[in-house]
Image (cartoon, helix red, strand yellow):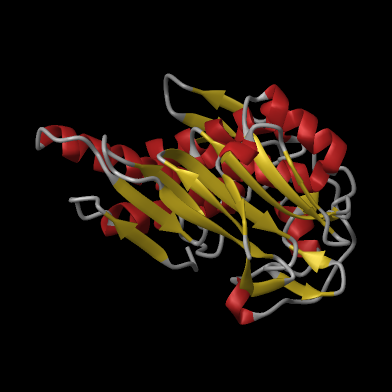
Length: 288
């Protein structure tokens, strides 16, 4: 997944699971099930269960955010220059391509089949990483139950993480980097359980105003005034998609979205202001 995965406390080998998720959901391998689905627009495709669940989760996230998170932005990502794995560098830009056709995707749950409309292709990068961590957390919990003990782990995939502590253990400190100065801390959270994800327009960036978080309405990189969002939720996949949606929506709409979903969040604006939801201060500590 082009990121460092760090696991503490899980007494089960989770590397095969992460490699499986990457193999199925990557858009950079032309032989992956996702790439095969993307080439079959207009036709029904029987897909692996993992891909079916990921697409279903992505569509639910699109509904949950009113389309601010949209898995159908691949054409727009490529038009912005992000058409190959990030470490290989950007490619030439094309015309902006608005998205917004997620609602036209059809699922057949009895067969595990998906039909994409002609011309629609999916990018499942962000939610795929979140689902990978969620699945790893489930496997760690299952193994702990098999051994007759309470689960206790931290699973961190490039800043998207799941936390679970056992009774009597101290909370886990989750550091939030300053998006303008990644070597500095902005704040930290103290969590006993839950999921955290951070998205930023300053991380995967290849030019002025060019980054990987696309506004589906315009087909161009988002420019809402929010440059980073950290969300605390029950699942990493939900925290991941809500963080991206906040960057697309901007501060007021993003805050309303988080409140409506019962989640906590911290937003950083382009001028360095920090906004956070009421209640987050219960376990938020400013960096000094």
